[in-house]
Image 1: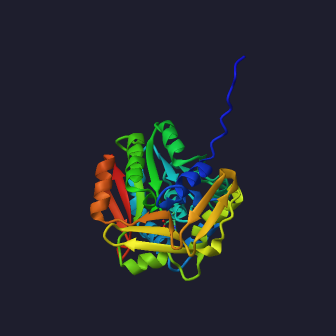
Image 2: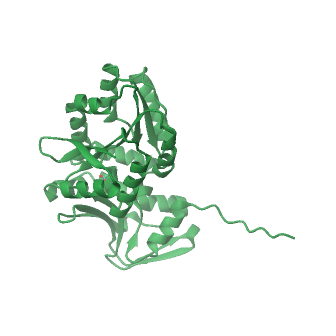
Length: 321
Ligand code: AVI
């Protein structure tokens, strides 16, 4: 008789938590911030006075929409593929302008969250009813593979909000290499990257006075408690972001304020914390011209244009193959 062993379906969150909390030093991955509550908290972060990134990118797109649209345009029209589309607030500036100026294009918003995509499409139906949209749900990796399908005309791939900064340098290069591989000679990659600036300005953006970013960071613990049957006490951890002006890296931590043990039932795991031991949860990289040139070169792309605000705090770049 044949014996079949059934392997339990892999849960990426469980795998990541197990690996991260049994490593030294302890880590958790920021990609798991974004459950329903995390999506809402990130929306609130974007409205914070300290979180300058969103408003500045909005302003850059608004001030330069004509030049950006001209760079995007192609005689046969183009597909505008946005990775991590979110609520589309910033993109709508471009979409509205492109439509008003009668550019021919299809908007392809990509997001891992079906919920986010549905909200975006219904708001677009109301605000820009004539817009041609083709939403795609999936991880960046899945969608990058599917980009093969968009070969019939020019592709403009957009990646706003300094989302690249949440990847470790090696992951960021691999991600960009995949984008390059999906691009033809006419295609563009349009990316927004937060720049190095006064360390206090950066630190304040990740340590807002009202505590929204703290709740966003701690939501990882709540998620472990809910989804993996854990017993983290959120009040026994503090949110602690640090910025290194040399590397341009902001790192966020959760620091245990006492010696404690946490039990995560579904992983059959007991995690011991020394007093003041940390869990590293997020990296938010800030860039300068040397680091952006390095990234482009590593990925096999050229920077052919850039747009910024009056303080040069944030930049949007056009990359080509
Ligand atoms: C989504 N990402 C670019 C944000 C950032 O700035 O790194 C996430 C975030 N983390 C804390 N505040 C905002």
